[in-house]
Amino acid sequence: MPADTANHSVMIAKATEALLARRPTYKNLLQFYRDIFLSQESIRLQIQIAPIDLPEELVALKQQENFPLIAMSEFNFDQAGSTRLLKTVCETIQRHNTELSDFAMTILQADAGVFDTQRLFKALLKEDNVFIVQVAQTLGVDAKALAFVVYTSLRPSIIACAGQLAARLEKRPGWLNGYCPICGNYPGLATLNEQGHSILHCHFCWHAWTVKRVFCPFCGSTDGQSQRYFYSEQEENLRVNLCDRCGKYIKGVDIRKSDYPVYPPLEKVTTLHLDIKAQEEGYQSGIELALNG
Ligand SMILES: [Zn+2]
Ligand SMILES: [Zn+2]
Image (cartoon, rainbow, N blue to C red; front, side, top):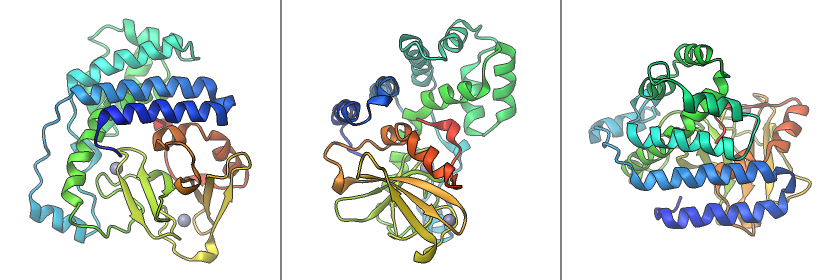
């Protein structure tokens, strides 16, 4: 991802513009996510993330043993920035008049005693679903929608934290696993870059890493016989990689065939027709779809 945030925002705006012409049925979703991603970029400029203390020997050892650098619960986050973003995300949901408008209003009006953002942020990072479900039940809202809003609000911190850790891995290429070298989560999207290299994008921290061209990130298979793919009928730069060994699929974008800027998180949430097609063919997503965005 480009280091310069201003360029990043321009890229999101340009990518949305291009996709509005190519995927008109996604108009509402594209405009909604454009606003969400732009808000996240703006918060990313303002936040301060304390560096994670990880001695060089530990980085080396974890890499050698194929362990990710940190667990999800170890991500640092900016409490004030994430709380500001949570409010903006709820306002964006209301502005776009989505089916979650009532949910957003309940969250915006929730009493701070019940709606403790710091505990919610920590619960999401610890994968403490029990706490998230409890808060959702107390407020009478959908727990998945609540998890989505909490993750979306934390995302600038998560990306900033992953960016700091990625710098530690620069001199250590060669991570060939299907899970993220930073946080251990699976990829939400694959891209083929200009050189034809296969890049995986973590669906949680959005770190990107290079893997072998024929490779299933979910079971590690490199057997060409078990790896297939199909192209989107409407857009030839979109494809879905299918694995007959584990029955999972991952969506992909071929950058060489894309005549617009590709912003991976936007591609992931506006290609749901490919998820449907892959699932109709009997394949399962390799990731939890609730964290879209
Ligand atoms: Zn990750
Ligand atoms: Zn597989």
